[in-house]
Amino acid sequence: MRIALISHTHFYWTGLYARYFITQGHDVRVISFSEEPLEGVPVDYIGRGTPSRRKALHYFAGVPALRSRLQEFAPDVAFATYVSSNGLLTALCHSGPLVVSAHGSDVLAGPGGAWASARMIRFTCRRADVVHAVSQHLVDALVGLRVPADPIHCFPIGVDADWFVPPAEGRSDDIPPRVVCTRHQESVYANETIVESLALLRAEGLDVRATLIGGGALLAERRAQARELGLEDLVELPGHQPPEHVRRALQTASVYVSASTSDGASSSLLEAMACGLFPVVSAIPANVGWIENGATGLLFEPGDTRGLADALRRAVLDADLRASADARNRALVLREGNLTLNLARMEALLVRATELHRGPARRNRRVSERRVSS
Image 1 (cartoon, rainbow, N blue to C red):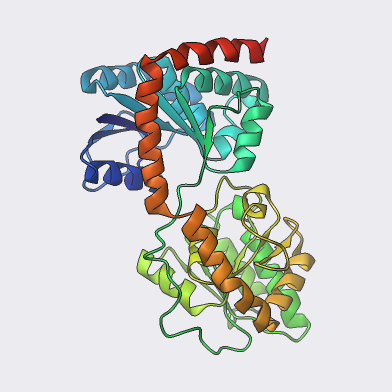
Image 2: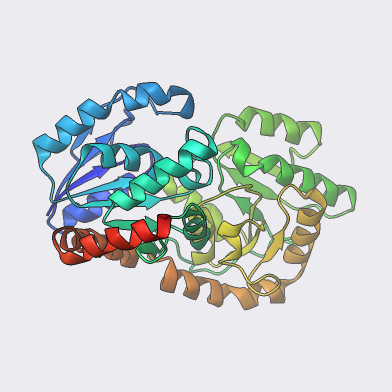
């Protein structure tokens, strides 16, 4: 199959999808509105910099270039990630088989405001032959925008469960156990909540060592916060780290923490669970579907520093609770969040789109969608 993958090259899943499809013998061309390099994958760059809502007109100015690249490549199927950006523009440019994939902010807070976004999303999903979402709460959001639920396929991208594994030598004997966070230093991840909760625990006589891996615009601010709260001896903020360092940090810690205020499907959480870490995470829809509170992890309300501190205290002091969740969490990732299995599932959806596009099912679906929207 000739597959056109319309996806920004700085999204980590772009390379995952492209390289997998290539290994399966497909002819793949990535078309990107961002300029970041993607090693080992053919890429057509048709934009300058990463598009944003503030640059919407500049973004739509790329429609002629996208149409030209698609006509030149003549794909058997187009696969666009992010419904309300790449998906929308591909729907405007491409009349052949189309798969669109919802990842989070494209549905939860699309460009152009709620009124325009809802209409763009409905148009894109009705034009697509197959709609995919990385989590159930995104399916619910799409249905809330009057996208028919029946054609929406739901599964995460997943993580490499052969790479992210529990430590062969067992966990360290640190008391209290080490805590790790692998979210970027950006406002949506609210890492300041983690630092504040560690300061609360220290004030109450419990020192918890934590490593917050990840670069981002707020890295200097988080380092300054740790200094101001007197936590330099407890909190490490090393910035961006290579994948092998991230994996080692997950293997040498015992508790994973995330204070994110929004997510589509958190690969960081799945990586931690695959490594046997005990999760302490915000009670947002993206996390609730993976965690049984009090059994396989602990949940706290987003922004609740006191709630996070209490959950961390329980997690680091209750070794039996952590041990009971280890095998269950990894088994869940192997079953539902396995990258290898889910890449194959996406490949099957691309094939399915070509079949739907040229068959009677496509015509029948359009009739049913008109009934839903009326």
